[in-house]
Length: 372
Image (tube, rainbow, N blue to C red; front, top):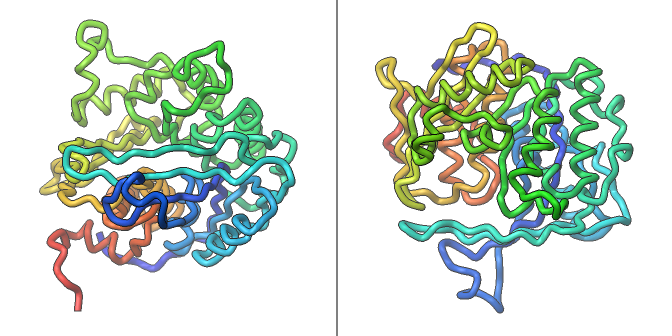
């Protein structure tokens, strides 16, 4: 893949929650450092996508609700520093600033995330708090996730309203399902999987580009026939199976134009194999990345620094490719997969890999030699 100048002036809007991320340094555990110091940054799936896009040179705006106070001041300054537009962020007296804590895993000890985000400002926001006619003016894409509607009933309604508004305005909608089992607790009468499935069946018909895993497909009732006999079959990392499941999803939701699935094989917390596929529904064409001699060959990531946010880096890379005329669907997927691969080497949720670094990886620079 040859680097070419960017000609896109496309504006991409993302909507969701941003939190204070608190983490011990390196691989330390929370109980090893508390009382003591934690590293604090700002992160959230939709904000991560906006930041990655902005760092790649795109026009990206992030929309959310935040409470008045110094944490919000620091957050807005951080978003501005990487080029994210913040003019449509709503400052409110209702709700709090959400927090999450993360411990980096290693070898056979997994990474762990602990949420402290109940009653956050965005979870208290109403659908009518955001004026999408103005927010989406001259935008080409609205990016959402299944995390924000998992926070509260009003956040789910706000997400659905945003998607409906985008459809009415002719703005394409992308959505990463991102199911979080620790969330989706706002209706005690329904288990998290049932609640998520019910809401997603309303949201997905409004989406053009869906990023989802096979686990996410199951939430809305899309399963493989053999799962009835062998539920463990769904855990295999198999591109052919993933393509079959994407086609089943396209049949269930004929509005979808594209479906992307990342292919992560967890060898350990420190060692993952990483790849992805993209189904173009209209042509029924499946694209895979990365490729070696024309065949799928995943990236081996043997020393993960931080995998949190890697899916967001993939989403940003895919949207970047789709909004630049020099990219095809194949090269868009290659770019997204390489971007997310590199994000595993960066501390924090935001991917600071440059376009040149991403394209170097696509072109075969996998040995990590010092660049002098």
